[in-house]
Length: 273
Image 1 (spheres, one colour):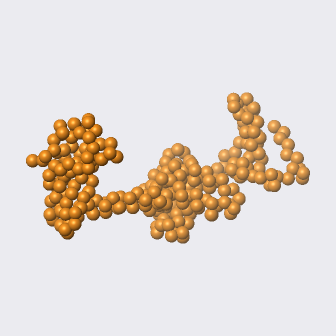
Image 2 (cartoon, helix red, strand yellow):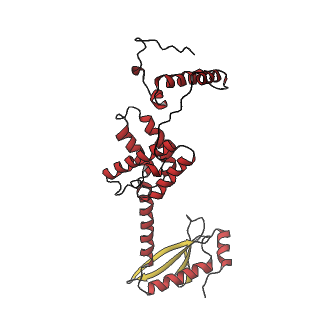
Image 3 (cartoon, one colour):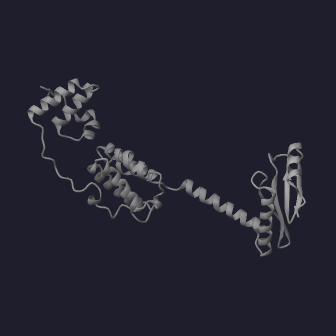
């Protein structure tokens, strides 16, 4: 039976009585140093003729009975030839190494940023198109995943979520950019396999067909009339929509256009509606 009791320990804590170590037996000690907020358990033993010790936990974490049980288990391992303090250090080192690896792991969001900066900016006329797919679809669905953890099911979940919100064309675009992004990662020796490689357009939004529907002159007149009275519809929106119809370009192409792409000296742009 051990030498210590819970009554004694609680009395020492209440009296703030400090000590280096009080033995309970079987290598179990209780320490209440001046720097401790609460007493801590220590296990002492000999391994290969050398005195060894290890901290087991605080009195708040381990009750007296639990500390005795753990001390018996550690004594049994020592008897079998194990250096339990060394094992604890190894486990701690492994845990720290895993934490460091997790912290420094490359994630899809890191890949997306590097890909955008090195492959899109300065090369594509309208980089905001790619930026939009990264920020609105790729990052929210895959961004927090480590590169090596991305599986085809993650790609499929992302594509289906886009299709479900009624945007098949965007699903196709997202698939294209995701494939290119992971191919870039392979070239940069970040991963070995592209998790999006097996996917085709049929797995995303499907084959895109050109629309033949067009607004008649009467319909256009009604649209422009509605734009003038629509609540919160600004003059900027009005002009933008008319420019899109006149120029037949994509919205992002117009929004990202620079002044150098317009030549107002060679002709006036007049809206007659």
